[in-house]
Image 1 (cartoon, rainbow, N blue to C red):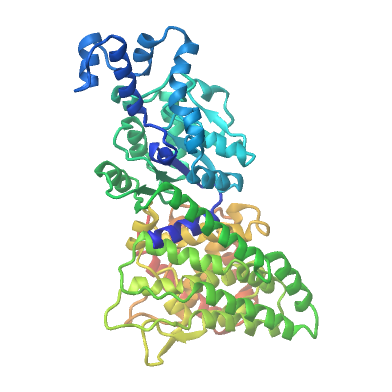
Image 2: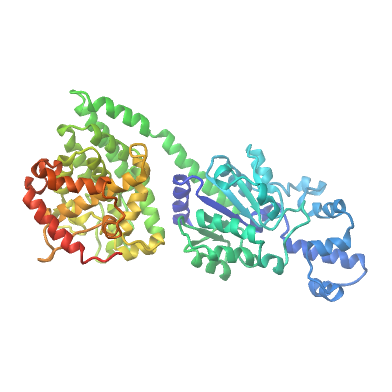
Length: 586
């Protein structure tokens, strides 16, 4: 459980509100709350005793033979109590505390309920789906000062707040013990009303799912809704104790999720809550937060005597990021979603401060500031991994995800702020070759580029089949870092594509052909060009049109790219474009 729990903790902490919980009867087990079916069987036995008959061998068969109808709450309660208050009083004993329960401490929110409530109160969980009838979770939430928006029946949907506007929503799909419209039999649980189905499907599509205390064995209607989902935007985790039911394993496979063995619901949520809190404490105790770091940088970078302070600031944060995120020791396994998510989250979190520092540096930098950026890139590409006699290249290459992120951050920023002298130096930077121990070097862009990880493997990890998975992944992950600078998403994508096309052109110019054959790594611009996704007046189109108009005065050439020659640029561009015509992504 440890590795998966670590990955899950990082993911919840880094992506507030994107996970929904799916809770079953196992969550209330330590509070001595019976399952719904246990209550049905107990009610049938009480009915038998009332009629002075014996149904101990098979209560369900006895009920079917005697009444010619399926046993459920409504049919059984109708025979035991006449009025609605009488029926509710009959059920209360199963869910509310008696004097004996008060002495034993039973029927109170469990540690799992309390830990979940804390996660909700801090905004990590916005939606919970539960098959339980009890109100232990509501009690735990109220103790944390959370007043939940509760959906107990399909009729409640008409007046409920949209999920996007609700701080927290609890959906009790099978009902509430204080409402006689409970669902319990196989027939009742096989198909929910269409409005509820649509509502639940939207949650399954839009959120990652974490299940606990739920086996998937009885709630066929809910299982069918989960299996209908075609979006896998966020990972899903299905927990079990002891032996995983085949139904739950099948759901995890359908959902492209992971099964997670736990010892108990209490321990699972307590550990999850503590790990997330530890991450919070670490962030709050970090000697620099992003705003303070950027404020210091701006002071140092404009001062003539601030170069040493500027360099110390960036290199200290670089060393901190390397220590936290880059040293990956697992290289003996093939790359899968769990490993990739774990590696990437670790590295992205480590770069949380360094990325905005680099963006701000490039915006205000002068020539004397460029060497520090180059030194940072160099640091991130010095592999600490000792390659054994056998290894899986794609797993080893995940070590360079942080290098890839930094390359794109520097590239996008350089294009935004016309810093092509810096970008030219980055493209020509020499680094140790991946998986080589004899000191051989190659250019950074030869080792770290959109082809870093095999596209088929990355697509199998990400879920959707992208034409250019690395580019799609990076554009989504980096968008937020530039959102305050480039508010328009189309403009950001155009600048992103401009950098990637410049990378392709410089690759051929600097690295050269591969075994006398033209080859370049390419990105999103390739399929956008042929699908005419680029407007003729957007940043990307106008940028490369200016090259033919301005020639030697075009900024990339003026700053040293392509040897400062327009003729070289034209020749390289023709070769790259001819090669790209052989790549069919449309």
